Length: 121
Image 1: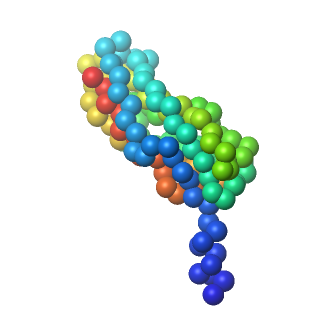
Image 2 (image 1 turned 135 degrees about the vertical axis):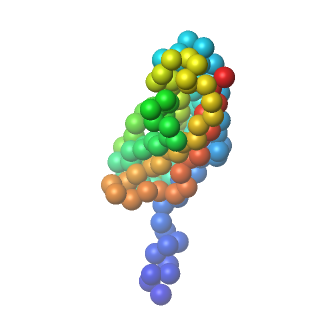
């Protein structure tokens, strides 16, 4: 029985919007970027979390989150900024990319991850 109840107390992430889309012009090439604000909460509260990002084409686009982590993720909403940045020249950066932002507590991922679509025009 204890195993069944353990899953009821596993931390969950609550994103204000999931999925999110970051859209920006890549006409300036390398360094062009776009950001979107997001709010995240965790229930129940967890301490010392970090945000981990992954993107579909890391040679062309980067995905970052600011701040990179939190001392406490709890029921109070925390604002974060999700940013996509071009890593290559303008013609090569244009396109649509997918990414994720995960919340890690040690080696454990707190579900669900934030799904991010990056559209570079």
